[in-house]
Image 1 (cartoon, rainbow, N blue to C red):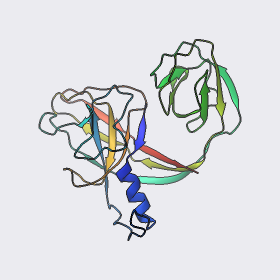
Image 2 (image 1 turned 60 degrees about the vertical axis):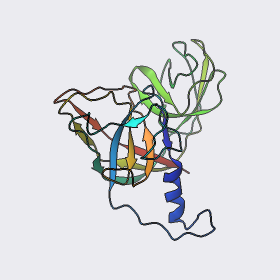
Image 3 (image 1 turned 45 degrees about the vertical axis):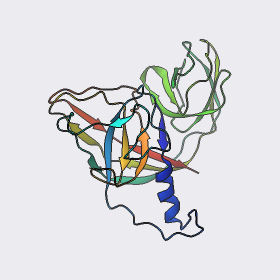
Image 4 (image 1 turned 90 degrees about the horizontal axis):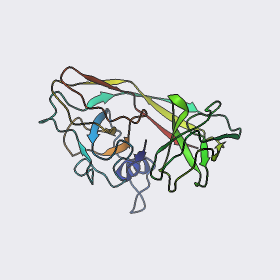
Length: 228
């Protein structure tokens, strides 16, 4: 699972602080409504780069087309803000199975005491952040592994982050025909078209790439976190 704040989304945040490239900006208008859209492309564990815009996602990524995915449309979503934190104690466990270079998740011997937002060091890897804890003792990483890691390799977890987490209300997409396989969702400030801004892209926490058929539904509960 990967996730990213886009450059243009971060620019909007800075503009609210009157910070910009020319030294001073009047804060831009705050969007009255945010929308959730779906994208295809990549592997289900990758997202567009930070330069992505509504007009150009980049690479093989693209928003699901309304002309070829019957019933698809961006959906409005509301968010609530809450403080979030996780235990800062340092935990030690091991890989229960080997993990290959490029993987975005690993399977541990135990996930007891482990939570989203905690840092993790897998074998010889540099420190990463846990972005999801799944069933079967799987944890999703903030970046892919850069080397193969053997079963039994030491895993150290801890040093959690605190911050403000925006929790979105669940939205449900309803397909009325066969859709392209969906690899994740994005947050924007316009209901359609390319005139708005992208703020955030993410894969699904369960690492799936669902392909909906007629009468199928897909429910998404978007969340994003800014750490202290």
